[in-house]
Length: 121
Image (cartoon, rainbow, N blue to C red; front, side, top):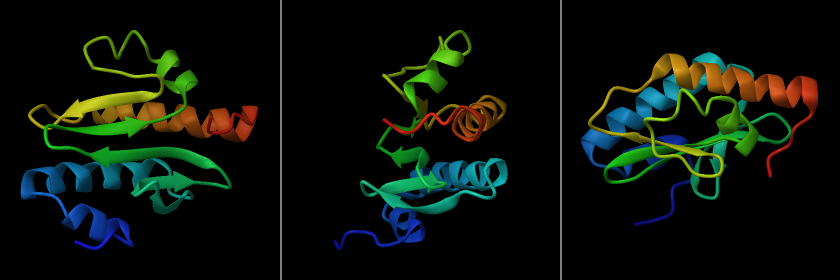
């Protein structure tokens, strides 16, 4: 299979259940960060504005949302029930997307970049 060249191709490369989850995350990303440029970075859907703001990726049992570590730290209490990494949050496919939380994390990341010039690291 050829490497995806667009976000649509990326999403279409997954099983139906994963596609549905990724489309939901894409819609949430576009709605919360409408001025961000959508593209692929490291082979995954990424949203940028001169620098990468956030990225999401699909896996067999979960989707992974990657922010800056400072964004994940800012929401640590609310993320206690999730598997997290240095700047990532795993969203299991068999649970609803925490849309409000992810939207607030995206908004935080936008503010972090626009007002505090925190770049992707």
